[in-house]
Picture 1: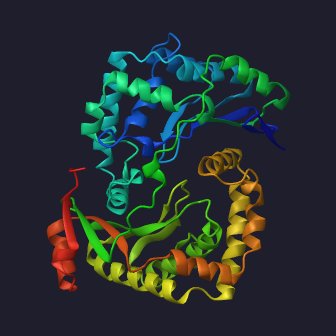
Picture 2: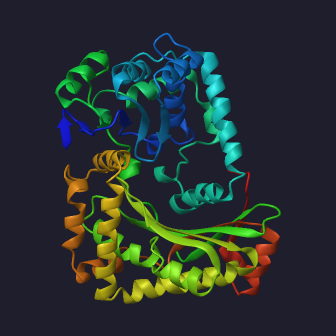
Picture 3: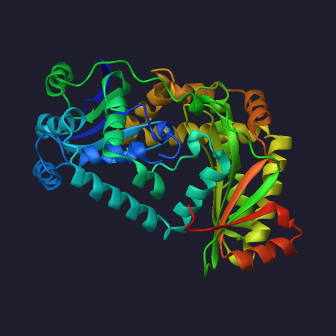
Length: 433
């Protein structure tokens, strides 16, 4: 059964593992301009030295408990998350408490952490899909805080002083800005007392106010502009397209989710998969998702195609998306994908860590406490008219940010041959951001 104990959500299950998430309501969107990556850097620095233990001693202590602990930074939150054998939960929480309450913040460890994060940025450039996502997000959001890459920018990481990083951590990783969530073999009768004891000394101040820029509406793209990320010797193209849509707390979020599942979901009969991959074989994959964000999230599509098929794929995708926006969906399609999403939700929520992640995510973005449990009923209650109205209000198929990772001289020639205007194509180096 599900519990809520002073903000702690747990699931009592007949297993010996406990999944733990301690989430800050502050993510990469709180990074100041020219300090992109500051939140992630602060969390990773605390993770690698606390409570009198060095980095290696902390790793050894976690290994001895049969535990994992990672940092995950997203636009709206930063999470310390992992799992541990239930019999070792108290000792595991004590280690996490050291990170939050007693981080060492050694100067040498900051330098090492900074080097590792910058190395990860370099490594990301070897993954064309991740690279496309990094450039696309900036292309879509521009200077809006959601345009900040969670992993950061090298110049910004280098510029952050030790005192600045430590102050940022203490501001965002304490008090009522934290959510404690656990799933697994947990005794709810003693958990509240355990947390109060282990996390004694954690500041109990109010959460810092959200970045006002985070809550503003991003400036939407105008028309179709292609950002061509030039990477040598590409035989395949990673392509993303999308536009700002709506907040997760908007009443249209679930109706639009149904519509976009019909257009670009992972079911083989979703429009993108059916038309682009199954019928024509133009792409290895084609999907579209709706971000769950506290501020205005994006409807973002992804296509992976061979270089010689990229232009045809792009033209077809744009044609399909415009048609989807203009015509909406038939009631039979909507009913099918309502059933599909209800079934998918049940399958996802059958896994404890997925359920835990969904509950934390709902809390972060401002959804009702019962949202995860009532999602199937909420989806089933929607009408075809509500779904089509949401599509009409929030799908902007003629105003899209488009990003490609490809070899620019080859791809630009193909695009110009397809009668695209040269002024609509921006070429950027793959290692320039």
